[in-house]
Image (cartoon, rainbow, N blue to C red; front, side):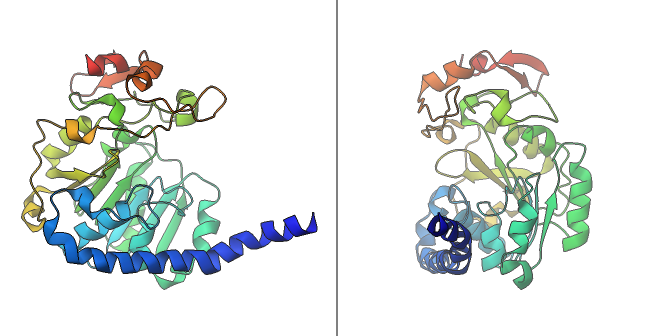
Length: 309
């Protein structure tokens, strides 16, 4: 029992003092090596590199910052978890970015305050429940703390579209937003607005959340942002200012056909007991087929099944 207690107490210390610095150094070396191959990139996902992000967003965001000459970004991350696995931590450690990290998790603030990056650059953890009503004030606070916002990352597993609607994009150059590939490529749809939305409570499968990639394209295009790509897995979309597209050496995307970006092969579904059920293909749609969505272009209520008909 004493041995187990000592291991339990030492494990976070060893991880923080040894393994996390090693992870960063490996990531730093990988970024340096990656730059040599950039001329061969055809798609944004070719820039993927995972250090602290879940799906390779670290490499993509670093690549876009290089292209747009954003040397020390000012990043706002909505849905940062406890900051151990998120989209902006590597930017903070590698590019000395300023970051405002927002989440409702109780362990966000103590985790961030325990990082060396907390004093090596400027990171402000905010413990907030993110809604369309709270977002403008959060963004004003971030702007005041950092002197502006270059990058916004949004991943709150639910009410994302309704939060994205109220973004102030005046100073923003890069947007990264989570989308639900199971909602297809053709329709602009989102789960209905629910400021108390909890993905774990909305449906036991955890497959019902967020908005379609088409919804994001249609929302940001009139506001001067163009889709430049997604991660390879197919759940995070990246947008840049349309006027800056000539700085990004990638093939342009035909947004009339977004099907390449909803080829979702991840089997993360859960059963009623919370265990992985490994649903794939049409079985995932069937699991949530009757749940409601809103066609955000018409305001009409439809079901998940309607998105594939």
